[in-house]
Length: 322
Image (cartoon, rainbow, N blue to C red; front, side):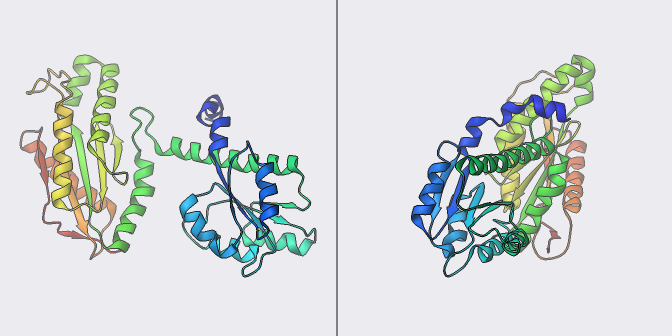
């Protein structure tokens, strides 16, 4: 696994590093500009000279690293760091403290506040650049590993690990926002016959084409297409009611059929899919597995009805509460 990742270093190179964003927080604008100059060519930098504006700036900038001066008026760096680590949107952003103190107690306070690293004034440009590069490179590696662990290697869609973690989190978010949440379960019709007729390599090509048709059928960034296993797929649709999920599912059936992939084992003589959908309103308790099982029952009905069709539970009889 490690050798494979090392061989894919092109996934994050020097150009990726230079696109990373570093937020410099220092009440002394001259000092902040000096640090920014040191990092020129390493990453994109922005400056905030008022510690009370850091959270607001993070929301708009979404930095990959924060360089934070310890001693500032109104709110010192330690307080700012603790606030960042206590806020879900910023808790994972690494923080490097800049301090003029070499005392053990100051350094210990930085670590306890949640620091990733720190540099001592007067700052050596070479040391700062190397430490910043190491933190940014580690962040790029973690993002890359996250993408690898969340992606199906054949189709490029999200995988079951993503379903079990991120989609469950999205469901909890729906509960907090009191929004509906819908799921579509999709199965390629007569796929065993397709593999028997055309071979498994052609079957893989078919899976990739169908996956792309499904992905192209969902239009919002929050809508997630997942390969569930074999020839089965799932689409998760936050903030989508019965009418919306039916529109998306119908579009998926149409787009797959429009691929016109020959399948002589099917009565339609081409590749088609069947789909079942279900959803929840955020009122009473259920789980993601329950919604998927409900959609799977609808899929079974679609297959019993002759395949290449759609069935679903439009009354949203399931309910959700976080």
